[in-house]
Length: 175
Image (cartoon, rainbow, N blue to C red; front, side, top):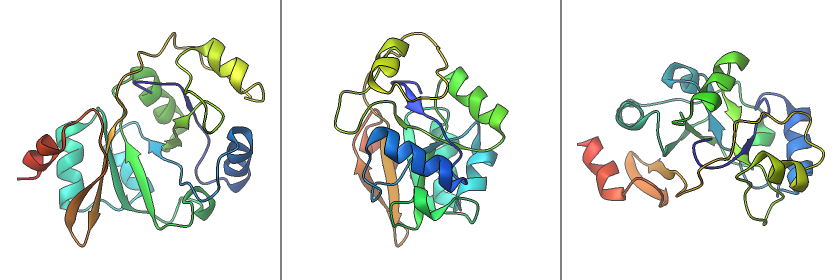
């Protein structure tokens, strides 16, 4: 993605999802975030209301993840027991091109064993996750602050995770 290497699988495929959780040693109660090529592709994964679309139009591509009610295409095993999906359009041409070529949003959890330092280079991915089927070398990732994650509770925006976009700027973009 625009900060770190991620693990991409089809969020509609329960076998792929199970393999990703096993490879990372990730708790199945932790939902998998997605990246998409653009807003229309993101809308195939979740249901965007006017506020979610306003945020997407203001910040994508970029470091803002939006949590929306999940659409019917996403397999339940990717949701960690929830009914929402976190999705964004990253500001990285290779990540967007991968989602575009796949034809649907893809998972984007960090490419590292759970609890370990996220990988910023292809060599770190290969060393930390030797079971990866394919490693797409896009050079070293720049690192940096993670995306800000925004959710909505009863129509009110809430900061799920602070990150690269200041919360005040998120709120301003909703006005």
